[in-house]
Length: 512
Image (tube, rainbow, N blue to C red):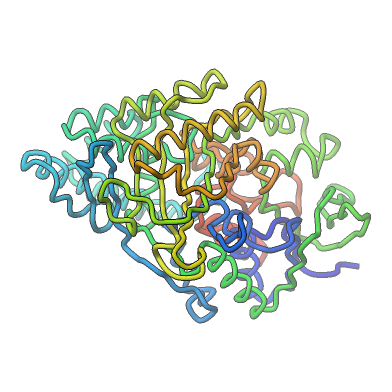
């Protein structure tokens, strides 16, 4: 007998968003999370006594408005310490560039010529991102007969593209698949700005700014909140906490420490799951909000899938290139006068970002990694003891499968600290404790295959109707009763909830 109407595997932000949306449609939903707490990559952790940081993601950029409103997250405790977070592109000489407002709307430190060029480029990129944004809030179209596409909605989106005007439409088609370095170097001359934008385009990706198709990743980043960054009050765990409370209030049953060992199949359809304890739970609807490669290869297995499809699931690329650094500091570091309440980016030029990526192609640690740094303790109390500070940094690029993992971790930590010391002299003397999570550590701790934050690389050949594979691009899978709802599906990762919400909408539409 079914124990509920739907079982969701994975209690990250997508799993919680999917659960709440399905519960609102009248379904009985159970969420199973292997970790001790819900949230996945949206967590706040104490990594040293009294020192707290966001465990993985540390900024909110594209939390889906449908999730925020539909789950009433403000009522369930989500608040922000800082909104419209400014970015400081750090210089080792102290000649920093501060970018205020969403996506650097104000950059007074630029030359007059670059200020005008940046205003024009920024306007164009945001216009292109607005065209792409509606695609993130829908099931991706499929190139097939009777694929169930929303033709009316797609027609409206097509009109939105044409509304750019003839010249801008041509530019959109020309630029959409080129590399971001060419765009930046054609339009801008300031290395600080070009380096920061190149970093943003490749953040969390397995490509460099000179790699083909890298511009589309910057547009994808902007398609969420048009570049507005925010720091949650209490760290990213506050997002997970609010979503957990909202799901509970909607009637969702949440179970932590419940690791799924396999998907049960009765006849030719998914019928439930078996936990690693041997316990079985049954439901006519099984939804995986974890990595799709893991779902098909380990939880379902080849006996229940077409041989060709099963083989292709094993080829879904999921290489992680970002490490996460946490430092417990006994004082406030001085980044040569930079405002510690801003987002600090160390990416001096396009070339430095590209060189950092070049190293990991050969499973090596870059000599000069690039990074995004925030000081959570500068945004409110409770993140470090009085008078002390916590530092959180996303450091890239990091090899995901080095020959000697322990040696690579030590080498990466030294390279990151060397970069930080160059931009904040004396920082090493403030360190009481350091923790560095390499991609393979992230894979082990958060269940992200290959350490990839998106549960599958964001690349043109793994986006939209190709994500994760054409046969499963609209969240339904070739195995009846099994659906996908995680970041490995469209539109990808980030603390968004969009994939989970889209999947629920699709389920409600198809299974009326």
